[in-house]
Length: 99
Image (cartoon, rainbow, N blue to C red; front, side, top):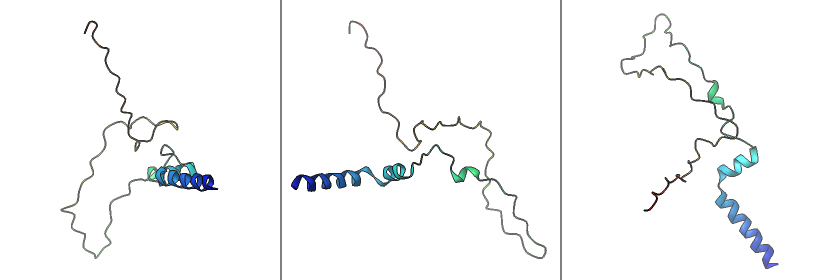
């Protein structure tokens, strides 16, 4: 009976340490490489002011620069997510012979 309680407690601790993000991805099968809703966003025309109303003060408005760079390559379904840290295994150069 103690072993079952210990096993249940161990499972609960492992689930708690696993993190909500991992559990959410497992439960919903979501991937960060799938198309996201924000990817369908589009620009809209500037605000038009009806006749008889004052235009808002735009002297402190920020201009969004145009993007003149090519789009990054599409990520595949099996590529790691960008929020995952990269591998820290750096290949070491071969040691000098006779050193």
